[in-house]
Image (cartoon, rainbow, N blue to C red):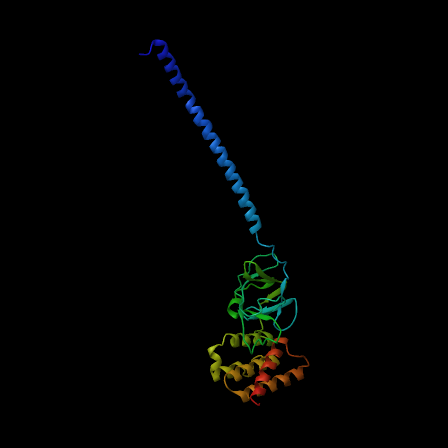
Length: 279
């Protein structure tokens, strides 16, 4: 049996332990939280360092890999009639993305705003022949999409996204959208014919339609005769295609001005095919 003094001491010890226990637990919890915070901050620093290392390499400056120009010839300005197509040549100066449709193109103005004009890449071995060692790709603004453009002066550049670490950037050219009150001229009509050929339009299989496309009163030029030759050749009319090439040369001689570069390349390619047929 404990006496009163022993009971008093035991009771005092009990209440002392009860009073100290929450303080001890609080200190333990505080130390655990501090250790957890230190671990978290250390992990955050590691993650920040990893993110820093994972940031992509800064992109090339505009003009790094692509030179854009009108299909008809080198220039830093191109004009088109609203409602008629336009073709742009991308001369790839890099050693990648040379093949058509390699990578995804995006279109911008000089300030960096994305252009939603509806450009599309096109390829045709006869209409847009590629010389050995060259790396040219073609863009087309269709008649339908050009009809949606307001008259004015614009700027244009293209980015080809190949993958997360590989992109090509073009230089910048000026594009003029002009509303014609006189109808199609020889240039816009030649571009219209190019568009039909590039799209493999079914109407080019109809002899009456072909006759109407090149009837008297339609804009005729050395370039349009080249494209008539392409259409007739693909339709199996080789004699007609040969006659169209001769007509193109005659018009070129009379006007005293050479074919546009795009038409000249198509004529050379067609002439080579005709020579292979012995014609």
